[in-house]
Amino acid sequence: MMYLYGGGYNGSVTGDVYISSTGENWNLDIVGGGLASSMTGDAVADVGGNITFDLQGMMISYMDTLVAGGLAESISPYTAQANVNGNITLYAEGRNVYQVCGGGEAFRSDENCGQPTASVGGSISITLRNSRVRFYSDERSTLLGMVVAGGISHQGIANVAGDVDVTVEDTLFDDTALGVVLGGFAEGDGACADVAGSADGSVMPGCNVKRFIRGGVVNGNASAEVFGDITWHYTLRDGLTEY
Image (cartoon, rainbow, N blue to C red):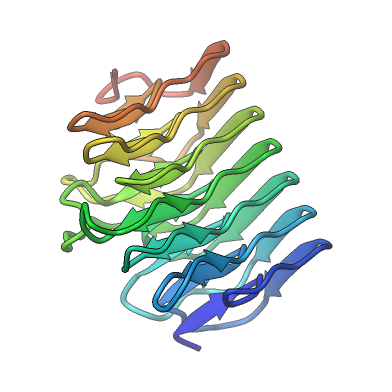
């Protein structure tokens, strides 16, 4: 499959979402929540419960992206909403990725489009093992190659109401990859990817990540704050830069 969505397409799910894989598999994009795309009107693709990933198959495609929450794309004057009310748990191993996002992703194509929202009402937990994180650049961003515990916002809203934690083990990062981000990633005027709770991160053996960012990443007039306590753990300090 090239695309896999756990939630609905411009339609909501009231219960939980569970996505699992074993054996060799090939994907381009996996989204745990729904896809809200505002082409002809306001779009809503919420998930009312929890989202759980159990990805243990070996990735054989060049690279893909994992968005654990919902994906809201505003490509017209109408709004797009793909929120998750519950908690998110993402366990993945053997992946070949350029982006792992624990929360949702809100994308606004230009300033004339409506507001996209892909927030998470609960907490987020990410575990990535035996994988590779590669650098990649596209029209949405030039700072890819990252594991982001919170949400990703491109001129939208992708907040997290609860806590976030991320663990990375036996995973290789490209030298140009951004690294591990404990908070959210927000770029563009008005973008917001805040974390209301605490953030906890762990870099375990077998990782060559060069950058570990304690808070969020901001490009432009945006916000990606972590309002709770921030803690992180590492096994090897040499070569690891803390921001």
